[in-house]
Length: 269
Image (cartoon, rainbow, N blue to C red; front, side, top):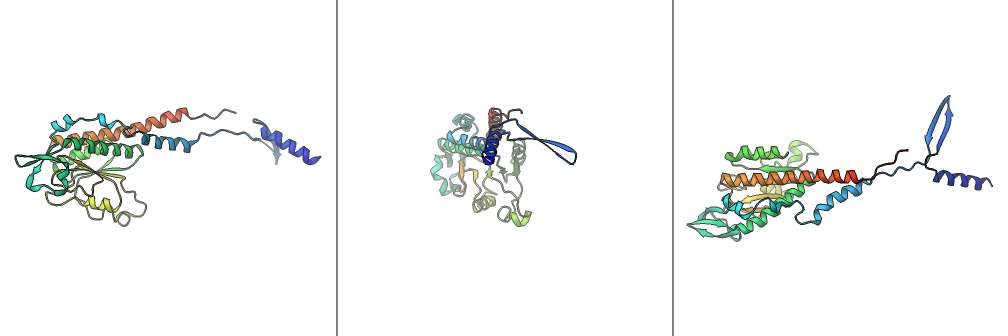
């Protein structure tokens, strides 16, 4: 009989939503809520939905509308170097040669640039660290201002060897490496490739690089065939990457706001 009564009492306590229990201890009276189930928002499910939603659309950030082939032509992206400076691995990206100067195929540039911008937007959307790299002194202020405007980082000085591969030794354990490196010029000078491209490949860091007709695109994750010497072309690249990064970050804030407002609110007791 006592067991049946106890089971009945526990069953009633389980289904009560606003029942309170009061007890005294040392002259103090305490009251606690019993079995109040507050539905909490499923944060993990919302975060997973926010992360997976851009992967369902091949052009979720609409980077294809940021530029056209005519924009690339007007910025002289198609102009390469002299035929004698041509790198053999850049031959598939060339349209032809005119007056002993290589002409880059802009149809391929459009395709590769869209892929590079799309990947950059995904990295910015997920809160990744993006590093702009360029060794051209005349473009250093442009690259640094571009990185500053979109809240990222830039390196336009001499690249010390082992900056990525020996980061734990130089800066200590727990240092975070960039999630993406954007090379607006993949060369240190006319003859040598930028050392960070090799270091990034060793550390499995994805890279986006503008490769001219005299560059080696083999170690660049997302090569963008195009002119890397003309100021107009460099301004176009910087503007496109800045708009893409800002678009990815704004989209993330928008998605968090929408799903945060749509999450179920806890009822007041």
